[in-house]
Image (cartoon, rainbow, N blue to C red; front, side, top):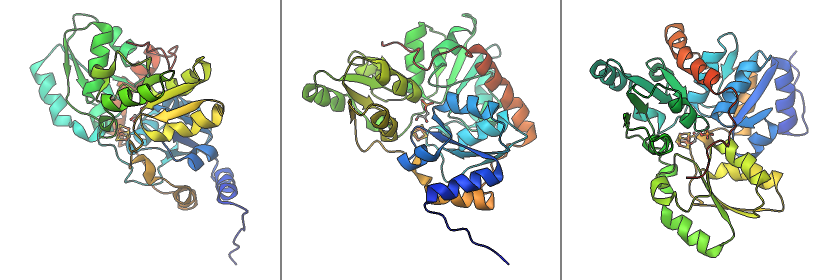
Length: 321
Ligand code: 13P
Ligand code: SF4
């Protein structure tokens, strides 16, 4: 006879299922607030990869987008990695293909490829190094100065890295995130006029970063932002990234004011995940993300290089402009 448990709340149900499956829930900073609240760890791409690598759980329920779940699968082949919705893609990750990288490599025999973590596993498999928004500057700084670099796929992050490192032998792919592209410098100027004491913090994927860099107080990864607003003496912040990040900022700092640079900067891919889908995921063990072994072993090298090169990196290493 089948028994149906009665739970007081969906959060309790998730807790029980997590226990039953020996699962850990990893959530990105752009997830809806109620998912962030049930997650065991909420963080940025680097932090989530590091957590995946060190967990003892049998199952990683990755509440983020597919390329992030793939990264967990590459790093932890013995774990079952689940994502609540396979439609949680990423416009940026879709902007560079394996053939594009192969063509560049054929034309630049001594060049190396740096792939932002927002790429699919097959693209990572063609790369020499991976990086995240936290450590992109540091990874590029450590590549010998005479080596040509192809940086994929984010043009704006690439431009920022080029500016910070002063490197001239970098080819930048012209990909972009459609969400960060919605935020423009006029939004920042208008909000700064209204809140003159507010600090402006920007994600390096922002399309207006070059134009706005002189107003930006800090350029940071999502976790870098979360940590920075806690330590800064400022009371008000204009936050130039996806709006999901405000949940934790407000929760951790109830006495501070957080203003989204653009309130429609919402990633519908990230928002595919819901608490109900988390329940289904753990109940039915769906949807498994498993990177084929031939790709996994090749994609692991650039990821491990990145993790080794930046094991001591702080999320908010990226100083302002
Ligand atoms: P972070 O690694 O800074 O969280 O960025 C991931 C991302 O997808 C930003 O759009
Ligand atoms: Fe991709 Fe942009 Fe969404 Fe981040 S915010 S997951 S880069 S589409």
